[in-house]
Length: 250
Length: 319
Image (cartoon, rainbow over all chains, first blue to last red; front, side, top):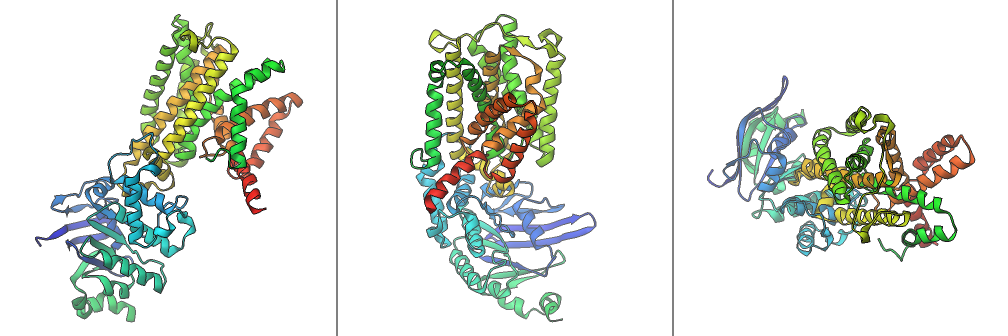
């Protein structure tokens, strides 16, 4: 456990009588792609929301690089190096791809009380933003409006935005949601290319994609992690078969 | 904006050139009243530009912006009542009082969203309105007469219709340029981004509340300058100038001209004032016609008058 970048201990969250997260223990190793799978309503998005700071857990602790971040705001976590993407694409549609990514560069590089110099002429920022766009293969679309590109490209932009924050851990909430086969394959390649450089914790429904790129899996059922293991072992795990994968066959 | 390469740009260039020589033109055709009209339009233009900063770019629909016109005007009127006529004092006072008031009320207003924000900004402005309405010492609802204009060094003097007009034009152009710079700088990008998706900005590490509050204060300070100029222009101030209907008119001017465009609000204000004047001259039922025109513009003129100007360029490209 010495090389864990994220350590979650005894995390608990309930909304009134509904328990969304129950005693979750989880660690993400540095440089790995760790996927959380689980049936609809298992509490995956709620878990991501607590990790990113959008929701406050009732109890338990979250440590990022050894530092307790349980009570930090979303903005502070982002600046600390923990970036999240959204399940429902939330890029800013009336802005260009480049402008979207530049906001991310800006958010994590100092304050924004600059009242005078145009951001467009800040070479350092444009370069950093273009680099992120290049990594997801969108550099040739930089000046198009985010509202005018395809859904798959918007999802790629979402990843570029997350990357531009220069994080050490990426929290990706269903990066393949609503994508076609080809687009999914493209996204898998993009994420695999980040392996080793960035640590990634992702929630995903597409099992083929998950089995293809994840190093380890955690299975979340009813707010509870029932298993964490390598892809191979999870596939053969009887409890997982019964509780989760089995559901689909029943 | 490419000032000369598009028809819209040409139109705005022509407008600005006209504004620069307007007093001489009106003198030549012997219509001093037009200068009065234009001066008032440009003062409201400054207020509209400041409102556009929070409403258009920031998505914060304030129905209380006229309060800052009032604060600015009383920052001229009250010192003048005690025979303090220093212009720098008036401007300094207006900027600081409006900043403090905007900081305190904005800190509360910005915790709300949508309709609640509209209502609470209106509530605060009505507070100011009723406060001045009850100040017997300063005329209450009878208002206050300002006998002399704010005093500045000779080369900056406001005395005379021409100098006051160029003062107004100067402040207006500075506000326009400042807003233009602001919107393209780091600060403005955050403000515009937060209007579309505040949660996204927070996830990017931006404390949006702090920036929106700053934006609100800046807007209030610019608006208070419009108040200082209005106080000098009318030489008579009363609480009536900061009622909520005035704030509503300001919103109309901004929407009419085109929200989140730099020059749109100016265009909206000039059109509003001219239309009001012209319609009132031909019929006593001018409110009715005016209302219908506004409805049509809001329904069909997407992007306001500025948007309509943009259509000319699209027509050119496709032909």
